[in-house]
Image 1 (spheres, rainbow, N blue to C red):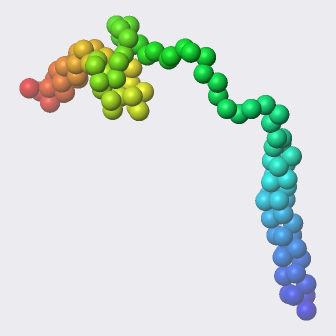
Image 2: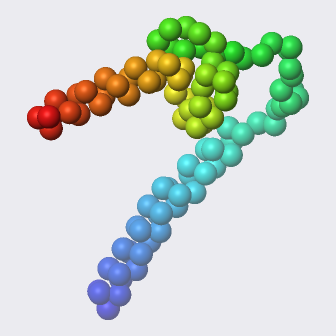
Image 3: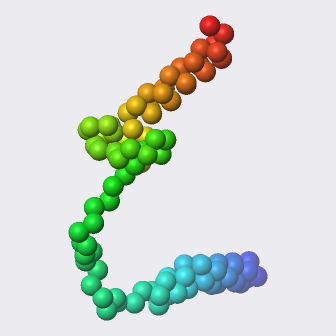
Length: 99
């Protein structure tokens, strides 16, 4: 009989812990969500975001002096500056290999 009572107490304790860990934070989060009174649509102001090379400062234009793959990766170096970096890395690699 004591085993069943102890088991029941453990179940109640675990249920209480579960409710505290799962249900209370959810209630807290739902209280923070307030419907916005303002429009969520972004307005265009007529300004266009321009990107510049972090090495030389030239304006980056996709497909002209900036690779399309760099757009998604947020690499802000023009093709010329990146070519310099590639050459430096190639020299470093050859030095490490002892050639």
